[in-house]
Amino acid sequence: MPGRAIAMLALAIPVLAGLAYLYAFDAPRSYLAVNAAALAIAIAWIASAPRPPRGIARQIVIAVLLLLLFVPLLTGPSLSGVARWLPLGPFQLHAGMLAIPLLAVLAGDAPEDAPLLLSIALLAAFIQPDMASGAALMLAAVGLHEATRDWRHGLFAIVAFIASIVAAMRGELPAEPFVERVIYSVARTEPLAAVGLLMALVASFYLIVAALPAREPSRKALAGGLFGFAFAGLVSNYPSVLIGYGASPILGFGLALGLLAGRPRQANSH
Image (cartoon, rainbow, N blue to C red; front, side, top):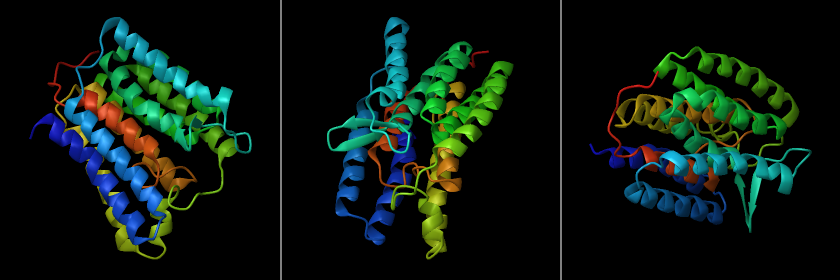
């Protein structure tokens, strides 16, 4: 199966499962419209994404992604001292879920630079505070370590684990219906539906980590980021990545999958 088709499936399976959940559980119709529109944009990007940026262009993209993570600290909005969202007119985009997937892919392109890049991103997650972004960065580093066996990625994962715990103690907010703790809330009344949503995320993880024809460090870093966001949404009041309401993760993982799609497997970087 072509890489772009695998990438589309990796995104579409959990998002479509989430749309079915939103419809079945009578979420506001605007929620369905936003997620469906974000999926359409992301699929169009995956279908036509250019080759990954190289050289100076890559450095500029990385700088923009890191800057996006810090923007909420300067602009707000802020809720109980927590600032994680990019204001965009009537929408508020979760900065970490928008920027970290693509950052993980680009870090995988040059694993030797990854500890520094991920450390800057972790600083933003720690200050915001945002345990979900910290967990995504931690498990992206685990994926990089698995692919490269570079001890620095393992050390970063340990630091990110501690930072995520501290962020969790400082930054938990009340859960928003249809956004956070989706699987937990569904499981109380429809356990089979909850299992279906979980399996949709597992399918996406598998397609990224094992089926997508891309360099091992990048796909494992992206899969780790997905696992981290999903884990945070399971255990605490953080957005349920790809299955709950929110355009940010759909666009963020769509951007990342677009750059991975169709890229041939190459020798690992060590």
